[in-house]
Image 1 (tube, one colour):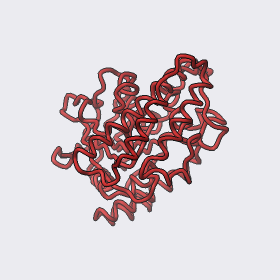
Image 2 (tube, rainbow, N blue to C red):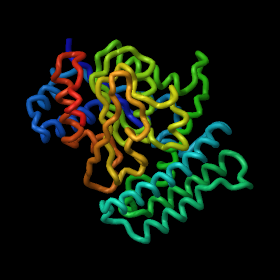
Image 3 (cartoon, rainbow, N blue to C red):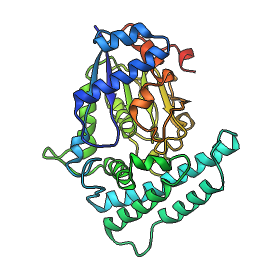
Length: 338
């Protein structure tokens, strides 16, 4: 039985699954080759290494609410409240990461400018007493995003992602965590999204690679499944946003799913979505002792949150190649993940 490789996308527009699958697979093959797994890269592109599946759910957010739509949209008070809290958590996380980077001497770009920008963004993110309705929350979010985009080195990224698109992304996180918006069958938006991911994973075993919001979705889905997951890879994850995402994860307290044999978490310090990226500081190990192991990568360019940039990293692709090369259902050596 061939191994299965499941990709779970994150925030953004409705996608064409076949095209996205080709792009993600191609990027991963580049990383595999650079990691010394050239044969695995060739087999992956030829379709022989694994059965590759792209779990697509962006269409469930509806038209006009994704990256290519009309802009940020929240549908109720619960979503507006979560978006408001998300703004504060996001800016606080950026501030803490900036301070930690300076303390560790790894912040080449840190200066008084960034500190002033973050102080201003924090003031903007604070809820207003006179604020009325979700539209005011969205306006505040746009102001915060505009300010944050002035941070070094992210300012040039405005050519690819505008404040409106950024807030649209954050709104998708808020809508998922609101656990509302029941569909025709009565299932909330979050349940319908997880069902797509569960269908893609199937009965397993499956290596699961998730990005951005998809890391939250995949984590919760894996807790609901019995399929063996030899390796769970999270990229650019917002899971550890303590005041917003963390307490809303299910189940509580957050922990590694029992069926996961290894969990690698990758983050880029220029990724403004992956704030508080070191998941092992709070995620409990499962009964087999498996907990997330966080590793930093460094990508070129001004917008490093894309899944393809993460997947092309040898540090990401190498362990995936090794997991797919093991017999189906085989467990990772703990030393490989340390």
